[in-house]
Amino acid sequence: MTEPTGRDRMLVMGILNVTPNSFSDGGRYLDHAAAIDHGRQLAADGADVIDVGGESTRPGASRIGSAEEQRRILPVIRALAADGIRISVDTMNADTAAESVAAGAAIINDVSGGLADPLMAGVAARTGALFVLSHWRGHSAEMESQASYGDVVYDVMSELTAQLAAVVAAGVDAKQVVLDPGLGFAKTAEHNWEILSRLPELQAIGSPVLVGASRKRFLGALLPESASILDRDLPTAVVSALLADAGLWGVRVHDARATVVALDIHRRLGSTRGR
Ligand code: PMM
Image (tube, rainbow, N blue to C red):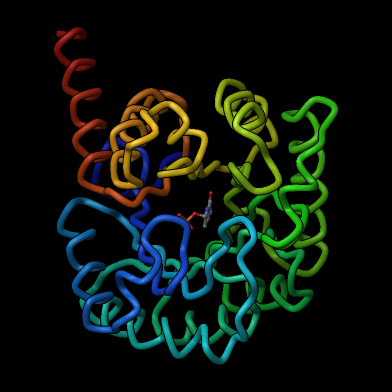
């Protein structure tokens, strides 16, 4: 399923991490004004939604409280929403999700898929916000030790199906839910590639699917050792182009412009071939 974005392509979710320590952009947008500027830039670059997060989920990261998380993100969400930009909030805390929706967010993006905070599903149900539910096994501190599967796609599918059933039992409408395989969350590079190569199996669950490969370590592994984090935007855009026909709901990326250009090239080639 694709959303009515005004474009005949999947949705591009631009990432705005208002954190000192996020995976690839930590510290850059901790200042509210800088964060708001960057959000506006992502929208100008063609992002359909800006995903605002205040807590890093990088492997090994320790948790912050929801008060600090909200101090970081709520002014940013208010300002961008006031501009008419569609906002998603990247949080595992139900109270932060509720405050963010009140501040103008339309989407709750919970990388724990409702598992970290038992009150999250209730907030999604009450607000009616779209709910991005990711496959998740545990917090950053422990997730590397949890990357063990029989068949990773089968296991992710069955665990996601159980997570989906749990939030529906808590009152969430299944039509509100977007599923995400949670690349890198308790997954090795091999697991990520296996999932990317077998997305139709996850789509068979019946919900729209979002994929977040952007700047992740398994893409960095393709580059020379001297490559910087920003060099991962090229392989990220290539992944977006290769997934353009997959029938995804969307991709979550740091460099919205690169992905929008990649998707435009894909579409242009397709329409030229079809002439
Ligand atoms: N990855 C990160 C954070 N939030 N949300 C969704 N839905 N899917 C993801 O894969 C995802 C996410 C970690 O990456 P970052 O620290 O670079 O934002």
